[in-house]
Image (cartoon, helix red, strand yellow):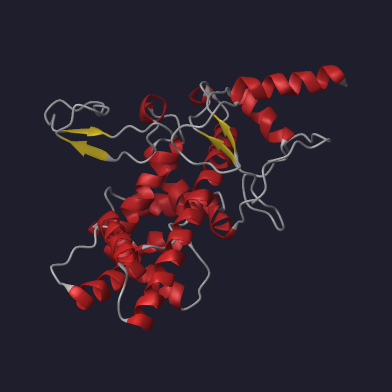
Length: 305
């Protein structure tokens, strides 16, 4: 028993280290690991399901990078399910943060409606939000504040986990693309006229853009979620999301996919994305709860089915 306990402590020592600039709260953070070690960790902390099941809370186990040997997994079913398990806690955490920011904004909006004004600090915070979510206006005074709140109410909302995970699966070929292991990039976000970033494979003519790199997976997913909530390209999808939200319809990444039917970057991209979400039942993750408590070791380790 003592040897088992020591081996568990040693395993944790190998794969857990202090967090980077990302704030993971009370979750466990894995900075470097292999597939076999990661599977043991998931077993030890009871993270058995790659899809959400009834009364199951997703443990806060966050990977900063994919396992070093992830792309060598030959069993595509095993690889894809592990891919989903890796990204699910990150997607739930990011949505939790977005909804906390929305709640703070709505509270400030109510203050404005009651007092018809904001304090200097409240105005500064609103301006910061407007800048973050690309809300621009030349209006001044009360009209400016009203427009900012109206636009932010449309923009600060859930970016569904099924949507985030499904797009990443397509963009990175289920975590095996070089942009993942060289740049922690999950969505092929581009940077223009920059010395930083990954040069796209096979690109010989246009040297003005590169694929953005990130310090960890969390920052990559967070960046794309912000892009969806701020970029003009997703305006129509956000508008339809808001209609569903106000109607009290359950969250659905598939509804977001359908709203982008005529904005597809590639032929049949939306069809592939919809199929990916449906086949792997990712929509069940859109309402899955993230366990608020720190992950705990379990006594009886069950084998994955």
